[in-house]
Image (cartoon, rainbow, N blue to C red):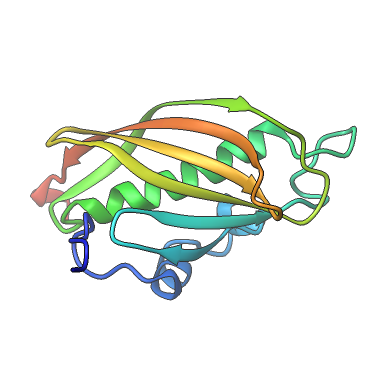
Length: 150
């Protein structure tokens, strides 16, 4: 038996990379790309390179948060009817567990709460070896689009 999807319509990694991670925006600039979607999760990755490290050569905590917020925001936006609603971040926090010096970090977002006006996402970042590097919790508001602005 297949698990029902929490997402409103299909959400493939290819479609997300083409329509949500756009040139000229931060996620594209730091190399974030969606790599997998499932019925209740999305996973994106980001390179650990000159764009994302801090002065001592390890992944910058802010880059980890940018990855977490990117995958969380995209996942949250696919849970609602994007013709009628949009989401905005309200709060994000993180605990940095272990440093990463090279390769990629992978962030997987899973919902903890999907409400009518808010969502809470659990986001875990792992390195190429699958070791936990960061945990984040991301809260978004679900807002109704103003039909007069369309």
